[in-house]
Image (cartoon, rainbow, N blue to C red; front, side, top):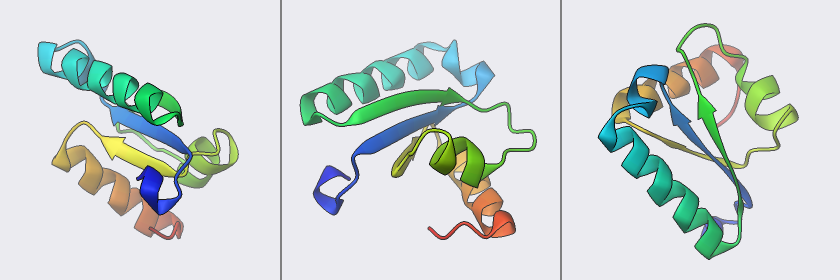
Length: 88
């Protein structure tokens, strides 16, 4: 993502997944990788309720790229982007 010009990445995870061993390991890997790459990072816990993508990710946090805990969560984020007119 850095090679594509992204400078501020978010890791999206659910409240349930964030407390699992796999969730903790993926979070640590994300945080370690962003430190190594020298890019901004933020972990966002999404309870999968209404989520204003443009405001929460772009306006409020200036996120340029998102990594999701799972393919399912990525699909839900893509659906939210589509519904809200956020280009991916």
